[in-house]
Length: 521
Image 1 (cartoon, rainbow, N blue to C red):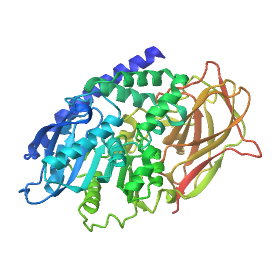
Image 2 (cartoon, rainbow, N blue to C red):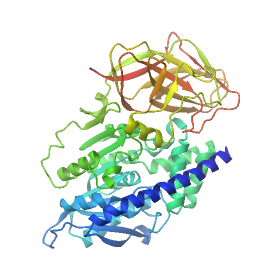
Image 3 (cartoon, rainbow, N blue to C red):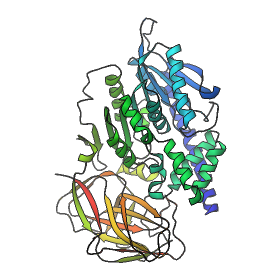
Image 4 (tube, rainbow, N blue to C red):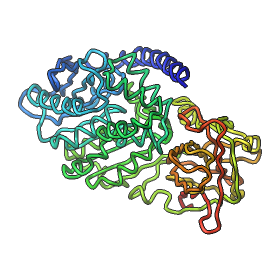
């Protein structure tokens, strides 16, 4: 396992290096050409740490009026010029826009805090600086960001009531639920973040230890890891956000392999102020990326409309639209819902009858794909990870299938697995996959999720309830749905002792099933 983790981190560094170099080469030119009024400034953040920043003011600023302020913290591993194209557009429409490199990355000082208290305090210091040094209106402050910038924006808004509106794009509200869902480490996602921070920033000793404990599956450290993550999760401070009545827009991708849509949807339901949730095909930050190059982009268009209404008071109708906006992976059509609970309100159960025993430690061939690459392929070409369901070896994979559907089934929301599991060891990991199976038995991945248990009594059955990652996918008429369960997936660290077996059963008094959320025709 140690050699595996080291190799994974090394490969992640290489991938990230190439990605950042390519992104810088492609992204800086259009931004630099457009942003003619840009000023590069130094801002003293929390504890005296110097943050590198840039600010753009509207062209008509003459010192006689104030403008709404938008603060944009950078994404994990990206430089302060990340938002130049969008910042120029926003400044042209009447905002003071300030982007800053978060501490620990690139030329900014300090060490990486992973949206810890110093990062939250930095955001307030940046707002202070903007109000003192630009024609920004203290009554009209907004924050936005992609990924890391999204997480910091939500946390800052909870702690600084001056922030009236937020657009959190491809971010997290629950860090623990994102990369440690159901006690399972999302190892590819974590290695990618680790690699990026090694290339572009300065890890603190605490962060290095967090990564090492995470990879090592050290259960003694689990309470500390969870507490560390909760401190950095907006869901922990949702009452403060609600008290501030912050207008919160969140956007994410169905296939986000770093921050799943489930944790955003759960958080959305807890918000009581003005709110909007948008979910589209793609992987982490891929739905927003064309906008960073200044190209037309739905996410950034809606971000502008959000701020126009909640900071400028524009009557653009964004507050009257259905607040939950979804785009199916199978179509280019947007759907509106009054709330998340209405998504997939109709449910059909597929019975998981009989008893199936599988051996662990071998990958059956059913996988969630590769971080970034698989969901991007699904976004661009509608080709998700594929497996031949009839050929999956039943020694290592349990398989159940529905009947053929006479009409198309529009899966919307979160599929839920309920089953009875009897292990032969006290720890274990399973991964559940929902497939769209065509006439030839070829299965296209609809969604998946991992589940890990510890401290169970060998031979004693217990209930497993698992939410698969949310999605919007149309199953064609004549196809079936299949649920596959195995124990190994390269996306996750598995906790199956050598030689372990897992038995799935369906007692008469507590039948096993997978519940499929559907949109009515």
